[in-house]
Length: 360
Image: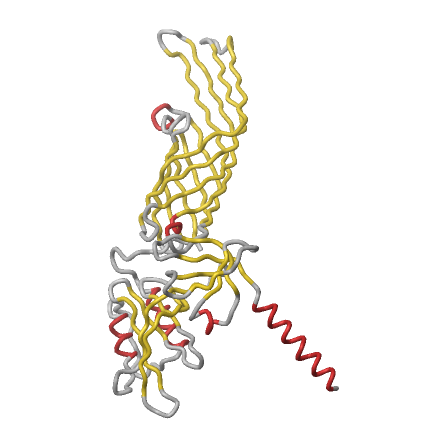
């Protein structure tokens, strides 16, 4: 029995040691706003509030980073920590209060116009509000030990007329987080930045610009996917997209003076797209962007000439296949989870594309 207990303890120690050495894919945001991809060591949130081990590749040597070294870090599974110089009051074990001021990594609970952060420090877990205009504010007690978080929350959500803070609201994670979530769903004020979704799916229809004035009957149809890998830093406006489009166009003219001949044009092609999108204002509802990439085009174009009696006397047929450049500019209008977008592409002939999709 004693040997079994010793073996169990030894196994647990080995397992904990291996678990402590686990690194997960993540990124670090420097104070200059650059995003460094790599691997972050897994650790309890209490330790991650003080420092994090980071390495740029699996075989690289790990570096220990403190809140003074970087602006923040995040795991690709969604958890994000941001460094702040925080000042908060803690209750002494024997009674009374003490103030602590130091740099810490705060865990992001809710992100938006009003963000909610948490500091997990041993048994005490203070909550913090952050807004661009007011900075970081702790939800805690005043110098006399009275609850001050309710008044702070009232001021923070005062611009949402349909939201009120109950007089008996407790300082618990569930209660405060529910209030902040309700505020995020409140109608945003004018010019309030809106975060760009990480995933975008959209359908499009389009046509060459000449079709609007040259009577070409035909439309392009397509399906596109986009992924934005970085939520913070300089790369937060960059996304990777793939898509598929199909186009069928037809133009028919007869009895064109003074030649007295007509022609029939028929074009069909399909193309797969891979591209990068750079949003210029990733925090706004109206977002211009640039894109560039490659497309694999496969299709055909055919032109038949005929006389007035409908007899064909000349025929041109061309097969198109291969890789071509794909670039252009567009604008995106974000409406909660849905969005509209308008694009123009100049290769060979100008085209206009109108899309509608959802983001999540």
